Length: 175
Ligand code: SF4
Ligand code: FES
Image (tube, rainbow, N blue to C red; front, top):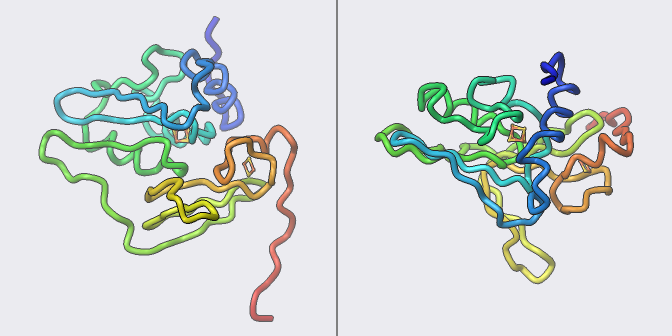
């Protein structure tokens, strides 16, 4: 019987258990799935999804990890879907409007948010390069590992939860 989500942790477990998340190719960088109607195309890159569940919280009728396909773009308006997609902190979700609606904006500022016991959520015009200057990823939203345990560095892959990473108290600056 299908379990109903009761809280954030439970929702993350649902995602990790879900049909598409069990796909063995999900961690391969470059896998990009598309879900579309004639108004909007939503793309999902499983390699960057850490099951933060912001999408499930925002539009559970659209983002349902127990359904196949798990994203149903006909279950809400394109505006509502675009709004929730932009909340995805990892950049796993993006959209393209086909109906003349606004495309994803470039964030005007760059921010790095320290998540308690978790990754760094970075927003802005982001370009990540390797030591030789080769581009690894360009995006407007990424989650970077700070526990050291990710198998998809520099990106968070959710390992911090499994290993019980604790970020500790933050030092005050300028004191
Ligand atoms: S909001 Fe993004 S990272 Fe979080 S579960 Fe949805 S797709 Fe994955
Ligand atoms: S912070 Fe998430 S895997 Fe390291």
